[in-house]
Amino acid sequence: MDSFEYRNGRLHCEEVLLSQVAERFGTPTYVYSRDAIERAYLAYSQALEGKKALVCYAVKANSNLAVLNILARLGAGFDIVSLGELERVLKAGAQPEKIVFSGVGKQPHEIVRALDVGIHCFNIESESELERVNQVAGECGKVADISFRVNPDVDAGTHPYISTGLKENKFGIAIAEADRIYTHAASLEHVHVVGMDCHIGSQLTEIAPFMDALDRLLALVDALAEKGIIIQHLDLGGGLGVCYTDETPPTPQAYIAAVLEKMADRDMGLIFEPGRSIVANAGVMLTRVEFLKCNEHKNFAIIDGAMNDLIRPSLYSAYQEIIPVEIREGETQPYDLVGPVCETGDFLGKDRQLNLQEGDLLAVCSAGAYGFVMSSNYNTRPRAAEVMIDDNAMHEIRARETLHDLMRGETLLPKGN
Ligand code: LLP
Image (cartoon, rainbow, N blue to C red; front, side):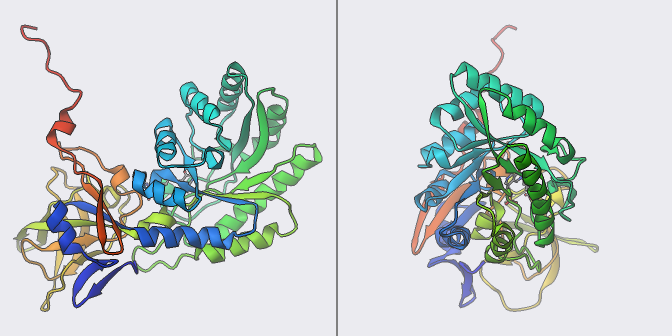
């Protein structure tokens, strides 16, 4: 979080006081640092300099157009999972030949559009999807470049909801079936096998599971080569963890160095699909304390941000640091930070030692990934504003929703019915 720091007890993002952001745009508001995003991306791209490699940012982590545009300007590729994400990255200036299309349920119209713009590769997740891509490509008179997401059955050692590489998960094709499916794909007319991909989970804090997966994939690559099926690139997905509290995940440099070492004597392209590690610590969510409510068991701080704005604590019991925007000297107390949504699970943090008064501003840290993008309108709450800080400038990159936005498209039944 080094783009966010205290100076004289007041929290800044780059050269901007976060209290000024709250004053200008209200709360809750997501605030991102351009510098932090750029540095996180460059850690990947510079470690891969001179290699046949693509860094395809996983759009799902934070899909704001301004975020995508910052990355596109640096030459990033993108990992998308829907037509919506495809249109976003195109609007943000992505180069189509640097886009990979992941996800288990690609629809025909999504495949058509991706073929039209000429994406790099479809990451296919099942035999039925293979048939669909082959058929749609045929109807378009095209040949689709494809990769299979192979499920290597390794335990990423992460939260069960975000662990994806075990055989009980819905993702990818089983490694035991891969040989047969690749062989079949090689016989089809409208697909061209170019790659192999995997994504074993998210928020991994060790290199070992990535290396296990890589070993298993390379064994499969070699077995296929013997049959004349040549895999040109390996896509290792995303998954590198970040520090939310006291985790010590490997740096992108260390992770990539380990991968490059294993790949040293192979002439293969590499793709990475980082999401969280690019944006998580480049963002905070600003929220204000509405009320303090204390009883003999508990102190509650009722804040204006809620589970609809940031669902990770409620959904995954995820821990996100919560810090004051202005430090107040004096004694702290344990507080549960809860939102106004009518659910017991509506909390952003529990038992946090803080010295609070009503009206205080707080920053929920590491909120740049899977924050705004997972927000909802539950309880008819407009979604938050998003602001990008660039040195001493603040840019509103998404206006707070209005109640009009929320009711758009809804209609009453005709009178008399
Ligand atoms: N590639 C694929 C195919 C993925 O499924 C994902 C994330 C990524 C790349 C990016 O992974 P990352 O580098 O961000 O770990 N909402 C959850 C995380 C879900 C991740 C889903 N897939 C959370 O808030 O923790």
